[in-house]
Length: 128
Image (cartoon, rainbow, N blue to C red; front, side, top):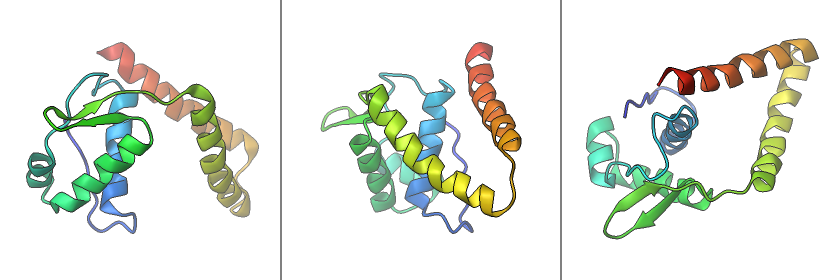
């Protein structure tokens, strides 16, 4: 699993890690049932604190992307229902779209951007 963490970013490292894992699931480079590296192993591989990895895994568990098992560790398990996901997307997109409107981004530009991003995930799935 290849993860890119920007140590100079204003975004918290545990959020970056969470986001990278979600993108890995979306592109199917990480699949349902796949175990994630142990907290210690992930921390060593990236060069971050174990508590940071633990926090990312805990958030992923709360959001329904992984199950935490004492014997198996963190395992990808997609238990989130579609209605809940759509509600979360609506909340998150509201802020992103408001920022775009403040910067004069048009509706057409937003649609094009969303289509490009969505298609990149679909394309990654087809190539595997």
